[in-house]
Amino acid sequence: MVEPLRPSQQASDSELDNSSLKIGVLALQGDFIEHIHMFEKLGVSAIEVRKPSQLADLDGLVIPGGESTTIVKLANMFGFVPELRAFVDDGRALWGTCAGMIVIANELTDSYPEPLKLMDICVSRNWFGRQVDSFEDKFEFRGLDGDPFLAVFIRAPVVEGVGDGVEVIAQLEDGRPVAVKSENTLATAFHPELTDDTRVHDYFVAMVREAARQRAGLS
Ligand code: GLN
Image (cartoon, rainbow, N blue to C red):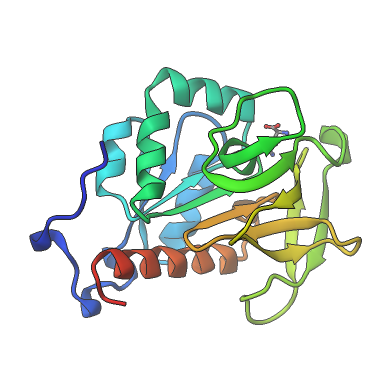
């Protein structure tokens, strides 16, 4: 089980700066290294998570892009599923990118894999077609300052529906949702870790910080 924070481990407000936050990236398959490099650029320590016991120390977790069937299979094989559920129920921050978005969905329009049901969204895999149909697009990402975000889509999924408490924060021109957020969970159909733009990682770090503050009773 994920251990709750003991009072002695609880952070005071001033301690919750980027260098004290602990973020993990699920390193079973996919482009976890690229996420770790993005967090390093922001001065946040990020570790590769290969065992469920590593979740206990983390404030936030990313499930990266890759191949969702493989990630689900390995997550089941290594006993991650109940621990991930406990992680989310404990109010820690979770972000799924591309395959990660498929993995965390409550529901898929596809017959497999069986998603882990960690976020109340319905997702369609490979919505834009095959690998050759990968593309880049620019759009407003609510909550990011500056220019529209240039996003990389690789055999990307799309969000078909969201449940209560999940808001759409980025859409393509045709209105298709490609980034959604609930209180502690973020999902993006694209790959911010494959660009030089750290704004979405910074956005997630702010979510992690807020979740840590809540859990420490600071807000
Ligand atoms: N299409 C892949 C899947 O279904 C996801 C692709 C990606 O993560 N870039 O898992």
